[in-house]
Image 1 (tube, rainbow, N blue to C red):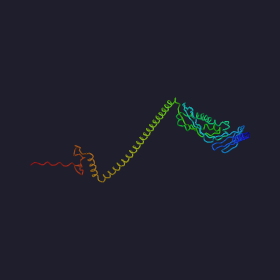
Image 2: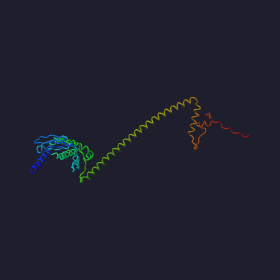
Image 3: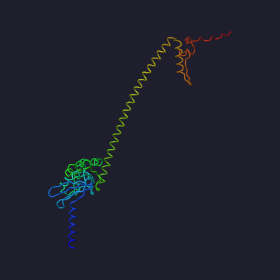
Image 4: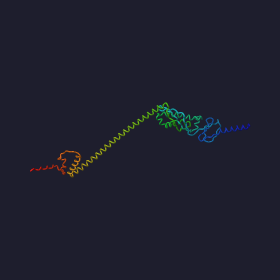
Length: 300
C-alpha cells in the first residue's frame, strides 16, 4: 500500500515538473521567458520548454491591435477656457515585447493605465491649442495630434500607438446652456457677416453691370450716329445728283413730300392759295405766274 502511494506521489511530481517546464504559445501572442536576474528570452508561437518556476517564468503578451476605452470621461480645457468632457479610445499594438517587460518590470497588466495617462497629457495639450468652435470641428485632427504626442513615450514602452479617437465630446451640465448660447451668438454673427459680404458683392456686381450697360449704350449710339451720318451723306449725294439731272422734277418731288408731311387727315388749315408753297397744286408744271382773273362779262 505504501508503495502505491509513493508511486502516485512520484507520478504527480513528475507531471507537475513536466507541465511547469512545457508551455505553448498561440498565434496571437508571444512569450517572454524570464530567469533569475535580467536574463530574458523571447518565444514565438509553438511548443517550448523552460525550467520550472521559480527558476524561469513565462509572461504572455498579446501582439494584436488592442484598444483602451476609458469608462470615465476626462475634463479638458480649450484655449478660450471652456471645459469639455471627453472619452478617448486608444488603439495600439505591442511591437517590442522585451522592452515592454523591462519598462513595466513584468507588470504588463499596467500598460492600459500607462497609455491612458499618456493620452490625458497629449489630449490636454491638443485641446489647449484650439478654441471651442475649432475643437468641435477638428475632433479627428485633435485625435491625430494626441496620437503623435503619445508616440515617443509609448515607443519607450515598446508600443506603437495607431490612433486616438474621441468617442464622446460634451459639455459639463452646468455649462451647457451658457456654451450653447455663446455658440448661437457666434454663428449669428458669422451669418450676419456673410450676409453683409453678399450684399456688398451684389452691389458691386450691379454697379459693374450698370457701367457695362452705359458703355455699350454709348458705343451703340456712336455707331448709330455714324451710320445715320453716312446715310444722310449718301441721301444728300443722291438728291444732289437727282437735282442736277432734272431740277424741276426734284422740286416737284420735294413739294409732294412737304404736302404729305403738312396735311393730315381731319386737319383744318387756312392758307393763302396764291402762296409759292402751293404752286404745284395750282400748276403741275410749277409755274409761279398766278392764273389770270376771269373776265367779267359786259352788259349790253
